[in-house]
Length: 335
Image (tube, rainbow, N blue to C red; front, side, top):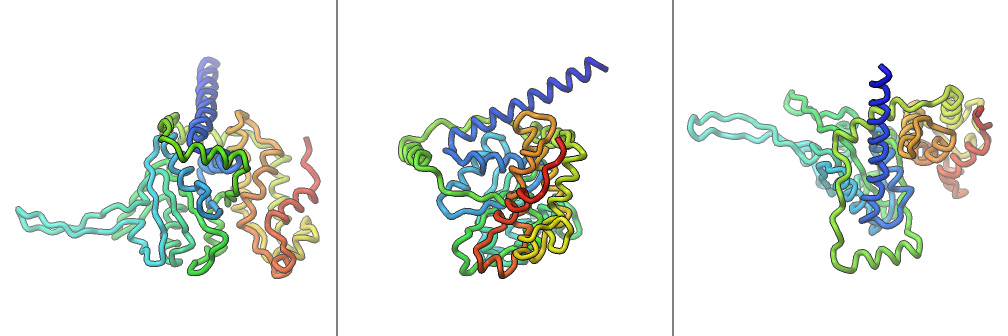
């Protein structure tokens, strides 16, 4: 029994060590964006999907492609447009004829959603019907067509992007669909030094290919280990209080929430925060989550789950401002 436990512990340590190799592999093609890379890896380890928000030209597509290469996962990219149909993503049935017998039959042609890593570029540019088809596949991890149910590959990870500035001709995601994303990741401009490095890296000869450091089996094993990371009862209670405090009218809600929030986060936000805190702990080589893990991920988990009031818009208050006020207002959990 002791030998088996020691062997299991050694295997876990080896898999955690691969996460450091994964970060270094991504850094061979991506300059900076440390917080963004970390949040994407947390989403992957937690088994959820991420919505990236940032202006064009910040390397979102390159980041996702690099992640797929470093993980040796099948990668597909879909450019969402107003004329995109659900069948363009999920797949469709084709009528085939056997020339020898003349027999005709339908065969399901799988769409690009049947992959490990899917980049849904500019998701808010396609109509709600197509958005809903993708989000259903994200939630159920299956595709139903013609009375048959098809399992999506494992792992299955969707990274969707949207432009926060240009809103003409877009179909904003409803709150219920935004809630399906584990994290809303903000991609900002690089620093001056990082931008200089980007110019030097991308305007010369092609560099070395991104090394493959992990496979699908490693990702699935790490996702299982995330569930085993320890989270104390005090921290679990603090997360519960934090999520409930986003709801106007709750006893723990500060004055800012009552003034600037119309609807707060639901229980799915608490589930996401627990899993993300555990995933961050594992990413940093720890088997127990801390308050810092929760605080670091409170904004990415909650920012797209808060519906702000007109007063917040008038005064320029953002969801991140509300989350910061909540963290400052609530008493810290016990040590």
